[in-house]
Amino acid sequence: MKAVIPAAGFGTRFLPLTKAQPKEMLPVVNKPTIQWVVEEAVDAGITDIAIITGDHKQAIEHHFKPMEKLEKVLEKAGKTEELKEIRKINEIANLEFIVQEEQKGLGHAILCAEDFVGNDSFAVLLGDTICTGNPNCTKGLVNLFYENEANIFSVEEISLEETKRYGVVLGKEVGKGIMLVKDLVEKPEPNDAPSLLGIQGRYVFTSDIFEYLKLTRDGADGEIQLTDAMKSLANTQLLYSWIFNGKRYDIGTMKDWFQSHLELSIESEFSLVLKGVMNKL
Ligand code: UTP
Image (spheres, rainbow, N blue to C red):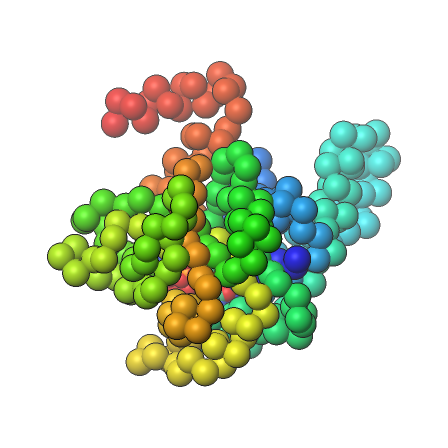
């Protein structure tokens, strides 16, 4: 099992913050978002990981590469804890960085990892989304993938007002929290939504998904949508959705970014004070 983490988008919903600062490098508590995501893959037992980046997002690669100058300074100053922490990041996994030359959507970003994945199965973790829970979302999906020998992705329960922001699942319940997917409806009006289960940002596929991605035409916006490829896949292969009951934070939104700080910070005095302030707002 390998993992692919798309992190090459322009982050237009979060401008001007994300003009030079990659959204995936925004700090959450004490580390950048992308590190939380890589750690989720590693906790799920995956060590071969490709991060899809862009020319404008070199900070992501720098974060995981050794920085000799800094290490020497820390060594000299006897800052052994800090040095250990920094070296742990350098060795976190076998990371490969693949540049997506043009930002042509999530499906296109995943296609960039075709050679890296080869014939293996692989998890996809959106680089701007943190999931917490036990087992973590990717681990839960990987276990179910092996159990059912089929493609699977996570969903969350959404409200009627939210359907317009999600890809929504049409399917048949076959187990606790598990649906056999027949179709996916992209951003439906509340009345047209086939369920209240929205796609979340974690997936496990066989390498067959690449064939469906290649058959998927660029949409009107010039992007290759992953959901379109998944719809075609569901016509010919088993595709399951699984309700993930942990927490998900879309760091590309101000609300989730702030909330992730509060909820993921350890119960320090500072976080308790902050929570008190937020509760009053
Ligand atoms: P989003 O659609 O949330 O990110 O994609 P975006 O395109 O950067 O943001 P907006 O919509 O313009 O604000 C989810 C993940 O997929 C990556 C993004 O970097 C993000 O982590 N992505 C998106 C790519 O790698 N390539 C793309 O062409 C698009």
